[in-house]
Image (cartoon, rainbow, N blue to C red; front, side, top):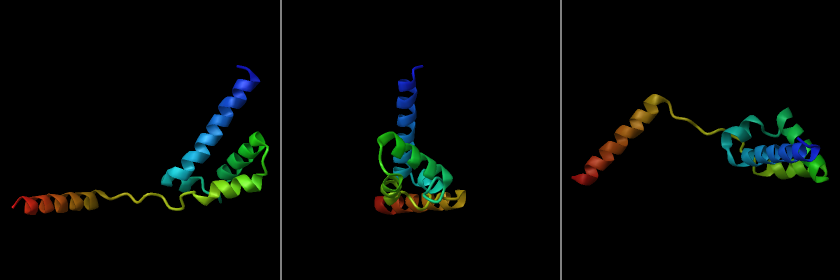
Length: 93
């Protein structure tokens, strides 16, 4: 594999991961701006694009998810299902 192809693949992975962190709450929370992973990815993107690392970090941090999604426990899910069944039953009456 040529160096150009290696750079293309690395660039694709870096940009994909940073972009995904901005749209996926769990990933954004895990590699948020206080994490070394986020800093290294921003440094790499800045180097590849010839931009200032502080600008890249600032831009990538703006819409980064701050909290992971809240998952339901099994009991909560079952309660939601029961409530929905009850609502549908009443709507059918």
